[in-house]
Length: 175
Image (cartoon, rainbow, N blue to C red; front, side, top):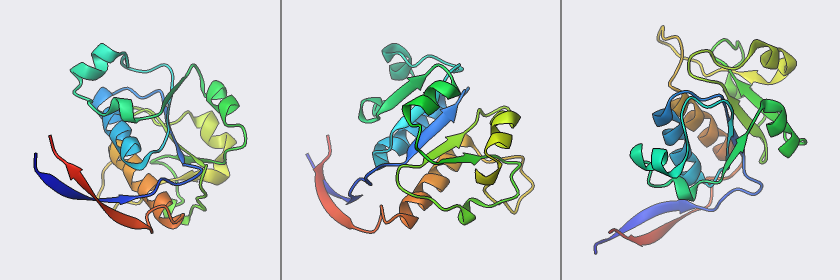
């Protein structure tokens, strides 16, 4: 088996928390799960989901790293909040006028994203108006893909929190 070097970093403690509220598209959630696995970031899924996450559905979607993700399923947003009542929340919306680059990220914060078709509920955005962020785009697109948005924000939060600063090379064996 050939060996290859992989650039790694230590997991951030406490980790950020990625929250998907009512995700609808399995491949997007799969891509977010892969990003969470790569960064050792817990993933919270708030129901209802637009798909199943049982073993059969996950295997059919080709998500072979699901076992590497700490996934938490919540019946509602209130149920999610009860599990992390002290976590600061950062909500993301394509309608925000404040850039995520202005956000004050700290380890342990919850990064909250809405469903692909409609984003986060307006009442939730209004409730957290001081912590609603957007990702600037120069093109006239409606919004970015959910998994891309999560990756952009999570890696920026990790970078600013020092989570990517101590890298090392790990020799791995490829199967």
